[in-house]
Structure formats: C-alpha cells, structure tokens
Amino acid sequence: MNIRVKWVAAAIVVAGIAGVLGYALGHRGSSMSAAQRGDVRSDGAPAEKERAILYWHDPMVPGTRFDKPGKSPFMDMQLVPVYADVVGGGDVRVDANIRQSLGIRLGKVEKKSLSPKLEAVGSVTFDERLVQVVQARVDGNVTRLYVRAPLERVSRGQPLAEILAPQWLEAQQDYLALLDAQSAATQLIRAAARQRLIVIGVPEATIRALETDRKTNPTTTVVAPIDGVITELAVREGAAFTAGAPLLRINGLATVWVDAQIPENKVGLISPGVTVEARASAWPGSTFKGRLVALLPQLDPQTRTLAARIAIDNPQRTLTPGMFVAVTFTGSSTTPQLVIPSEALIVTGERTVVIVARDDGAFDVAQVQVGAEQNELSTILSGLEEGQSIVLSGQFLIDSEASLRSTVARLTGTP
Image (cartoon, rainbow, N blue to C red; front, side, top):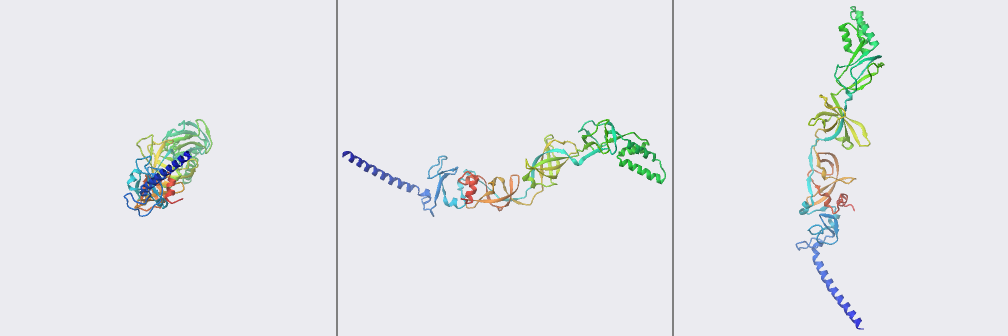
C-alpha cells in the first residue's frame, strides 16, 4: 500500500513540472517568433499584413532549407525567410544590402551597330582557275624533257619539252613553200596554211621562227604558258603520245584558295564578297588579303561545317598548298540592333531567357529570341526593350534552387 502511494505522488509531481515547463516554453516561443513569422517588423511595429513563410534558408547556400529560424550553420548570419507570396507571385526579391555578397551584377539593354566578324581555320590549295594543260593535238613522241618531276617551279616561256610530230613538220613545210608567194590567190593559200598550223597546235613561237629563219626544224619546243608549278607530268623522255593526250599540267600561284570550315550556325554571318584577312604560322606578322569567293553547297555531316572558298592574292608566292592559315571574315556594319552581353543569356534547352531587374527590386524572366553574336554581345530580336536592366551574373542565386532550370520555372510561376 505504501508503494502505491509513493508512485501516485511521483506521477503528480512529474505532471506538475511538465505543465510549468510547457507553459514557459510556449510563452517564450510565441513572443520570440512574432517578428520572424512576419506578424511584426524587426523594429517592433505591427506588420501591414500577415505573410506566410514557406521555409528559411541561407542566401549564400540557397539549396538548403530549414523549417525554423535561427543562425545559419554555414555563415555567421541569421537565416532568411522565404515568403509564399513572393515565390508564388512569379517574382523574386533580393535585398539590396546583400546583392554584392551574392555576386549579382546588372547591365543594360542597348542599341548598337555590329560589324560581323568570324574567325576560322583553313588550308591553302591551288586556285583551280589558274590551271593550264599542255597537250599536243597530233601524234608524236618526246625527244627531250626539260622538267623531270612534279611540283617543279616553272616560269612563263620556259622550255618544257621537245616534240617530234610528223604532222607538224609536214604542215610547216607546206607553209614554208608558200612564204614567197606573190599572187593574190597564192597569198590566200598561204594564209590558210598558216591557220592550219595554229589549228593543229603548233606553238606561235615556232611559226614566227619559221617565218624569220625560212627553215623547218624536225622537233618543236613546247614552253610554259604561265608561271607556276608542275602539278602533273604525264610523259617521260622518249615516250610516245597520242593526239589530245595531256603532256603536263601547270598550276599558277599568283592567287591561291583557302578552304575554311564554317560551323553550320555561323554561316548566316558571312556572304560571298566579304573581305578576309589570313595569317599563316609560317610567316608570323604577315597578313594576306583576300575575299570570300563562294560557300560550297555541301555540308559535312560529321563536323556540321560548310566549306568556304577564299581567294587570296599571293604575288610573292609565299603561300603554298598545304599550309594552315587562320582567317578572319569582316562584314559591313549592320543597322543598330538591341544587344546584351552574352553572359546574361540562360539557355534551358527549349528556350532562351534573360532575368530582368525591376525598379522595385524584384526580378522577372523574359523569354527572348537571339540573333547573331559578336564580340561577346548577342543581338536580341524580340523579348526586351532598350534601357531595361538585366542580370549579368548571379542568376542561379536569385532563386532558392541552385539549378537554372528551377530558377526559370520558379520565376515563371510553373508548378
């Protein structure tokens, strides 16, 4: 019986202590959380309206949420409440006192004229417009060859080969027999004989030598028609050839082509006729002028690039096929357009947005259509107006999530 009395007395004492502690803690908690819940301001004055708090967070570590106020475990500062009316209302507010701490920088939407510039790399090739093919229009054989290997440099008028062609020799003898003709009818025949020499391909220099020396030569010397290099040597000394067969192929170097690879998304920045500057590592400090001749209508499916053909003047023959060069395309200035720093753009995969700073300290999201990019500036086709303030850095800290996708979703009010 005594034991039961003792247990009852102990239970009454414990219940009393618990009640006193509960009352004290409840009274203290209600008095301390009034300002933190938004019922009163920090200076003790009553708030204009009650604001619901979703959670507390540290602005420097926005990804972590807390269900009650207190001191941040990360920084020496109090946790900041996140209100339901701000998040749900489609905007985000950042106190001006902590913008600098968060690294938020603002910029302006401006209207400027841009000069499109595009840099690419390419390789030097022969200008196919400067190709000359040396061939004989009759059967014959090569009695002497003055050039022995491909890629030898030759000059205009330089002897290339001596050719023995019976048909050429016969035509020269016929023309020589008519050189001293005096009658009008014979002169017509002589003119026809000379024209025959031209038709069957006898070099003009050989015809003039025949008219001067009044004698034929069993062999005919073929000379280079242009300055360049031998890109194809189809015959050898002593070899026979048939009518129409190419003997040599000569490519000039007065101009060269550069085939540069242009990314698919940059093709619209250039057009045929724009000026080009080229720089070769073989000639440091030298700049070569040229122009874009054509955009070749074939896209490389592997690299997603389009070949741009550039014609570059090469009077000193310093550029040779196979060299790598860096090229810069420069277009004419465009009409003034809205531009923003490219770092302000947020690409979500489905659209491109910019965070706009309002005068009242809040931030909105603006979906934009982006045009060309130049010198770290992007043209804006729609979505912004001149003079608007935009966020350049710290966009991901504006929202309580560390994800840009979440930032855009929260700013637009997406559930």
